Amino acid sequence: MPPPQRGAVAPELAAEFPGLGLWWVAVDVAPRAREDGRARLHRLSDDYRPRDALSPGGRPAAHDAARVFARQVGLEPDAAGLLPDAVARESALAGHLVSRGAVADALLAVAVTAGVTLTAVDARGVTGAPRLRTAAADDTVGRLPLPPGTLVVADDRRALAALFTEPPHDLRPRRARGVVLWAVEVPDAPPWETEEAVWQAGRFLTGD
Image (cartoon, rainbow, N blue to C red; front, side, top):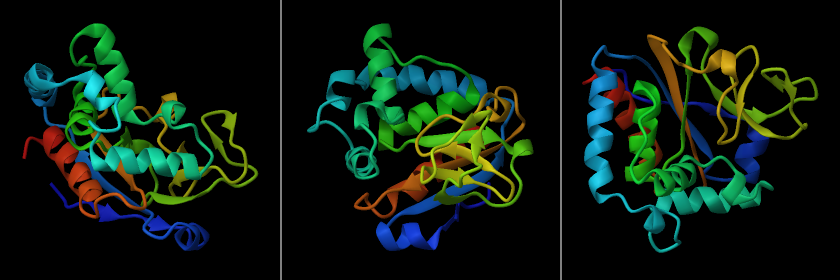
């Protein structure tokens, strides 16, 4: 598996938010990733406590930092799309961590263990290296327009997804062989955890 790479950050964002970054990696999904991911979630479910994950004292430091950053950029943390929050709410209702496929399960496992929100897209829909910038007036995600200034992860051609949100349907890696994974490194997050989270999710998918 290749090592995660740093994505470029628009200069105005880097100046406004020191410490803001992006880590990404492109990987091929191994045939056993679905089975391995389901078994991994079964093991994690034994010790996972959704109530702890939703409480300030029980969240990993990276999760807390992401919630703070969401508020800084005008997002309500509970509605910002942070994966650890969504997983906790879903598992509280289901009574266990819910398996949804190889890629989704890899992102879920990292969200539970590290508190980092990762996004995955079909590699066939990505041109060039992902980067972090603000939305332009003509940017859309799928067919939905983006308010100018929205933080987005983009490639050489278009905005791929808004900050912390799922990609549009045409980019979701349902049965993709190759995927691109990324995570936004927010200010005040532990400096190594975001890169480590991307690396770990990639390993889960490649079986390395």
